[in-house]
Image (tube, rainbow, N blue to C red; front, side):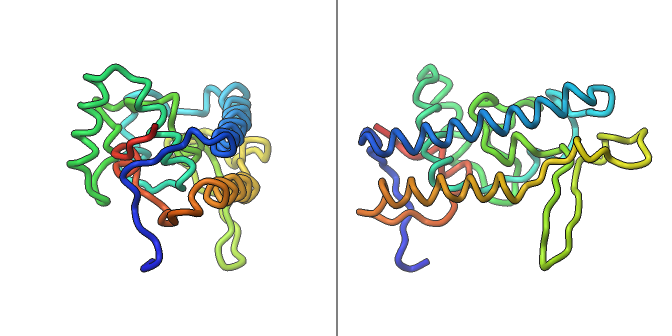
Length: 194
């Protein structure tokens, strides 16, 4: 990644950038629709709740540039004291520790969380080297012999849509200064967007 660098200040008030962020928000609405359907159809089989002692937020994940700028923009809408607190935690975060937004078992920016955070814990179908598998939090769907097909999120179409939105964002917005491929949530929270 020698031809890329991590920006610390981002100016995103160009109309095409705002469109890319709107496209990202539309994708978030679709992801929420899919996840809400599963939660509503199988509420007795979903153990994920605020303060859950699961592993979802125990790792510091990375996000695409469009998600990073969306996080940074959402952060700026919070009260200054909360922004300072979150940024302090982001500065102290490392890639092996918990997400810097995790506090007392809850996400400090739950409404603005990334795609992976929204689907985490629910059954997701992935494919790696031609092998398909379903991953999910083992606290979910414990009393069923198998996971119903309509409870499984096929991750490839969502990831493809996210990558397409991100490519458009980077192409239209970041072409004067290339982004890195991914940023940690901590790095995203330290971006200044105007």
